[in-house]
Length: 364
Image 1 (cartoon, rainbow, N blue to C red):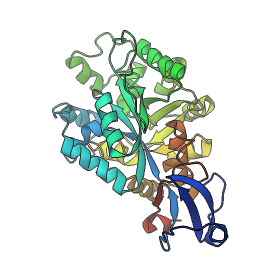
Image 2 (image 1 turned 90 degrees about the horizontal axis):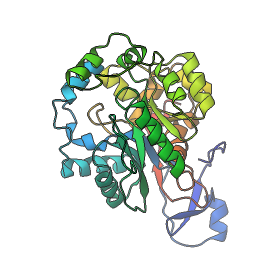
Image 3 (image 1 turned 120 degrees about the horizontal axis):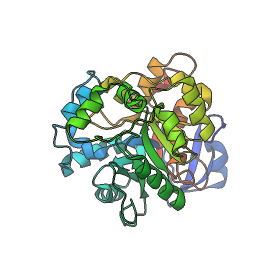
Image 4 (image 1 turned 135 degrees about the vertical axis):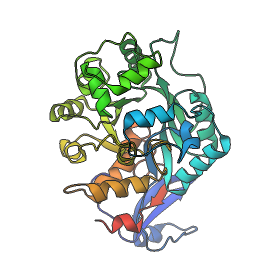
């Protein structure tokens, strides 16, 4: 899975101390190397998967939130749940599911427990980027990022959204990630109420938030979400814009020109009932795309192959296997800062593989 490379039939990968040393055909590598051989049989091997967007803090809410009733109903129910009651056994179960279904790295949003989530992922053996979520109106005294050193990943910052995070907080969060050379993540243009709030139009979600004492002095910018994100300087080549459902052609051009990467979460959008991103236009635009499962409060599982299957089965027009694999391997690895280690099968990278399911292969 080197970009632009053809599929290698009867392939072999030479691994030494967990690092890929050579890639080629078995016939060629077998002539010059000796050692143990693990024959996987007739399989389609690809790089380990990278789930670009999850909320593992919500692992205990699997099956407990309403599906298909719209964003406001989903949030109203979510706010009644014990959102921040971490359950270690269910977190472990979620991580086991990620690993069992081929995921080797996760980009995880942590609203309260960034350091704890990073520690848990470090212990799990997964690579990770944990985004400490900036929300509200208060700027930290020094840094958004809690201290801690990790071998398999790092902690960065994400803005929750353009309407729940003050513009000054968003600018400061983006500035810190830029200064430290880290990726920045942002939920962007996810649902109709977000677009209405930004435009200053009536919104049931805004009514809900203000009834809870939030956004009482919010001043709508009178712009579409993507317009506002661009004006605030939040979109560039280190930004991961998540969802991007409610966008215009002009918005797509803006994101593409900025160099940002878009993470699509098709099954989460369908589960909540916010609509469908214009996947075909995003792909045609040349914008780098990723797939994410989002949380178990808005999805049935954390299986990234199921996300890919759903996308392919519902995509209108041409979508190649390479397009899909790029969304779950090299594109997310690059935006999450692991492009030198993960995302492709080539010398010098981690020997982390998974097998493309026959059910997905059969669709191409």
